[in-house]
Length: 489
Ligand code: HEC
Image 1 (cartoon, helix red, strand yellow):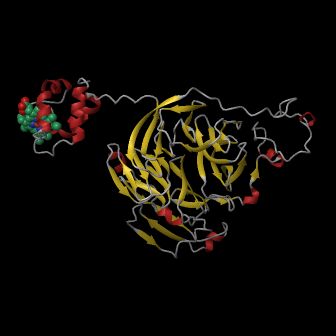
Image 2 (cartoon, protein in one colour):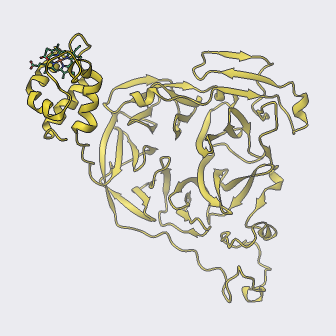
């Protein structure tokens, strides 16, 4: 569990100002600072009460990090007036405005470099369909669960109606605070979970409520997305009251007022106008948000049907869950229509090459630029959760199972160099190194092979390390696996 223990959370300080309307308000806002440790250990509040979450931007007393475009300044990319705002990029802006019946026929449109001669818009391409793929299934927990989320180190957070549990790679579980529906952002060194209780952070194997939660709307966070930036990361957190960006210790409200964010889904990466964008599905609309000098500007994108979820896929692709299937937008803005009517849910782990899709009839995966039916999955999957890359969590009435594409990966081979020498250095070298006082030297693989029976006996009986704490079960297992695997170099 060392990996979890070393998680250091960046959400240490939230510095904020009062409710304000614009940069000029900063000076008079009576800015106050709240310094909160992630585990709630310290809290200094030099100001008044926290601002009303419904209307606040949280700002540092300094240059306002974000300003927002009011909703009526949204640029509707499918709108003819807006097209010169995206000049010469050759973007496919989706279907033409169907209400525009007075538009001249395509032949009468003066040709420009961006318009293909003599043709109307080509019919949208179809998402290609690949061969079915088999999955391997491994049980994670027994019993009905409402949501599940895979965390680093093969730990799974399983949420059920009565209690939530953290289940480690060996199946040991610990009850944690009730978490509600879960979405996660995993960005080294932080692991953050959007949940009903707000934003949760994984700290030394424990889930704690991040102080940022204080500033989120009641009902908690609906999604969280980590975005790598120079020297660290930004976090985008959606809640019922808006979209917030955590950047350099400051949480700011960044969504323009009026951008609906209840139940919002976030995906970062696929480009909009050539730059990686934050994609937001909210209120049945897909937005691409890009930073500009004034803050974040939201553009609406037309995914050919009403979207309910999005996920980023490799090569700048964006996978959108829509009423009539799963559509895929290429990096250059062309939407391809999918063929999965009745698709219900997407699951996608940060950085994963696959997007998992649940339909009423079974599971599919979007991988290697094609949709594939999944075979071998549990039947009657009621929900999907995101797990590490290449994997998903399938929830059924009887339990939670981990799925991955292809066969069971072979267990990693135990070797002297990779596994045993580090164990020797840590637990035996003080006495059995060439310079140690014990006459039996054990610093090479050959010496271990020559003494392996004694080593196994002495360590399993607890005689060695002399005086020291006995080897852990994991360390004993490692020695046994090395022997069973043929004493590899
Ligand atoms: C604090 C010192 C100390 C540590 C640490 C220690 N040993 Fe020993 N060990 C000894 C001494 C002293 C002896 C008896 C002299 C000898 O045989 O070298 C011994 C003997 C042994 C023997 C018996 C050798 C023989 O031929 O009878 C084995 C095998 C052994 N140790 C394995 C280990 C292993 C494996 C570790 C680490 C997991 C370890 N020891 C850690 C001090 C230590």
